[in-house]
Image (tube, rainbow, N blue to C red; front, side):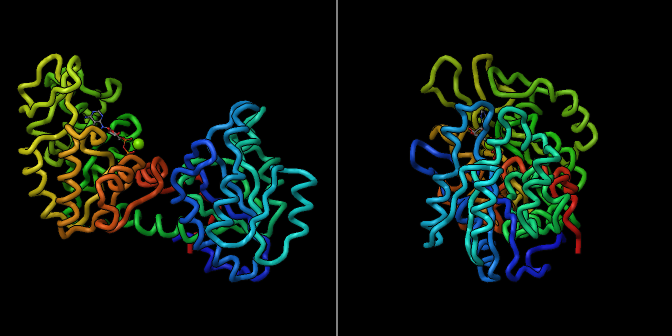
Length: 393
Ligand code: ADP
Ligand code: MG
């Protein structure tokens, strides 16, 4: 396990804390403050240790001067202040004399949020390309670096990887909780170990599938991923979503791991030309104008059996286009089965968590990983560069 804030003397130190405050904003409103709330445990611990806390985070993509207007972190400093019921200092500058003056005036337990690190991407991409000088500069502002930004753990940028080269570095409580829970899938998983894959981002999920398939006992396929496997098997899938580029690799995986793979027996299709159409069909009966949007009842019965005999289950991606009520049943029923089964159930993926929230299953699973792409990348390759300079204990 990586060294955490519990494993280093912190009393009175200046801390550079990397958080993930990449929240969705509409006008003047933060639509979901989960990421801000998730950072509070670490912040409070640092305050209890009388630290001066300098927080770095990115927000959105900043490619031009204009992008800065809609991607300022100032709105987050207000939310943070509300949640902690105390005032938060904010620096409009990401470097320079004004920032340094603010830091020099900080007292123990003060919190300073620095403007979006990606402002440094205009014009020379300094944050995202992990510029050496910028990394050294940010590191020079503090005594210790704490990485608690799980959502960006798969990126090696100046504010998370760069600074860790120049400061004693540890992880915060949020990253610790994520790694601990995800390591259950990576190091000696209990068996039978079942993986359920679905969703739309097919190419993004291939590295995860390749990494996890040798370790699991069953891989249940749903969503756009299942469509791609069906296409590789030369079924007619009409106008369904699939990924042509991944077919050769999927064909290879199917040959190598045939006995582990489970594919839909039936599906719910829509019609490309009729938005009101929905019909359950066997996978051999798909017509040219059909679009597969969900798994069918026979498939759910087959998958239920595997789910109920599993000890450990990892789920990523929704089983169908759950946003449309006509195609929600597969996702809803699967979550229902997972909520009732005896296995340790771990779920990851941005849309999967949104679906769990929409369908009211928030408190039914062992662990919901908040990292989105970071979760998938960590499982596929646990030796992440951003954590390279943080010692194992
Ligand atoms: P996650 O964010 O959980 O990793 P993805 O981003 O890969 O998941 O995919 C989630 C999206 O996949 C949902 O918006 C859902 O509508 C879509 N989806 C699932 N199955 C299908 C399908 N058969 N056809 C089209 N879209 C699908
Ligand atoms: Mg997604």
